[in-house]
Image 1 (cartoon, rainbow, N blue to C red):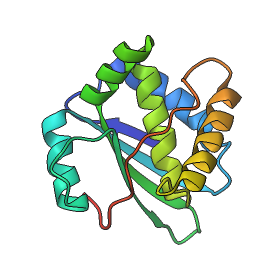
Image 2 (image 1 turned 60 degrees about the horizontal axis):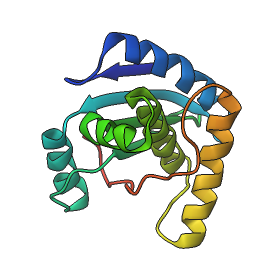
Image 3 (image 1 turned 45 degrees about the vertical axis):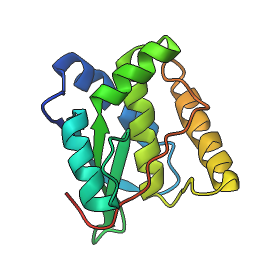
Image 4 (image 1 turned 180 degrees about the vertical axis):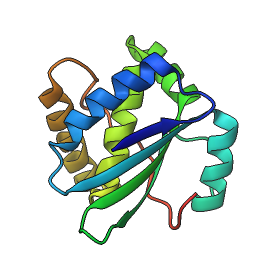
Length: 154
């Protein structure tokens, strides 16, 4: 199950993201029970980033997760629409493609991937590319986000 909410969530974009992310989750090695996404602006993302990472700047994605009683991951993501818009303009693609990349990146963090070292970052980028290329029609593989998993939950 995928739920997308937030002040910057657009209905058509949410439907597109839900369909693509549903397919992407099937390509993740760990079982995912549910994904809850909140699409936020820079202001809200900065508050979350400060609260959970002690960093008073905006970022692209934050993720939280726990394992449910069936052994599947329950994932919560905050995706920054403002950052997605900036990156989409800079790289010449749609905001929704950027948000999909952020969602995949956040899910991979929940599944145990990290990007704290160059080796970890390379491994995560390869996995992002594999998943997004597996969708066959969207996204921009090869450029990884820089967010890290915060402790706790929003």
